Length: 333
Image: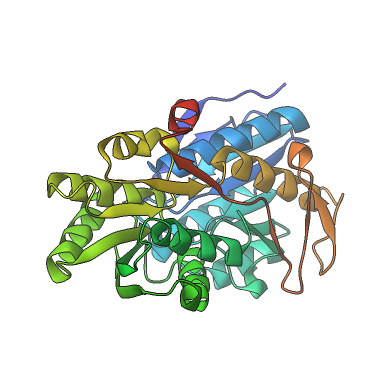
């Protein structure tokens, strides 16, 4: 049986750590830390539900859900050092920076801690493997297609990303630009960064509308940015004129679909992502699987992930939400 309560751990003045579990758990329990970009983000809170589900299925697993209070590498390094001091068995991290975290994560590995990245990756030397939520090329094509599908004659599109160092965001934007020639008439006029902060993302969206008065769409491949951009478009009275799309949660985007600020958006199930990351971390930490090119690693009800030459793999294809199905999913995540 898994026993859980909620406590707080401070590692420096700016660090908040939310713990699920208790230090009194049996010694044979495996402790897996799910480290997110920042606490208080709905996407990651949904992922934590998936991690708890996986722990329940596995048994004798304690989930430590933790992250900094803002989306910085420095905050995550403090979290990692705190987890090393606790002697956790595995760290599964969605990185704010692919390189800056490597020294701390290598230290964790040297202490015998299994390290994987998920959602937003870490450089290969800092982890055993990386779990992409979906295929990067599929995501890159999806986010531009969501805008282009509603612009048959072409138009101006801008990107509102998370942080400038976010691995996943940068790869998706790169993949988007690769397929841009497949969408004639679509012009990407600018890219700005909201750092996964709602207020900054809102201001950046306002700035895009001011800088590009003929703007037709804002693509935000971040669940924080897409909600903020949709709100900025609504507040500017441009719902139906500027389409906000990208990656978001149905529960947070239902109002934008209803108002017309967003015609459609996509996301994978974050619950499945947290579940899969936990299953993988457990398989590697227990020795049931090995992270190497070509290996298949079990993910419980999500099947298996097969690793490429960079020891990365993809969980599932993104799914599109619009007015035809938003009501079905908005109460789920």
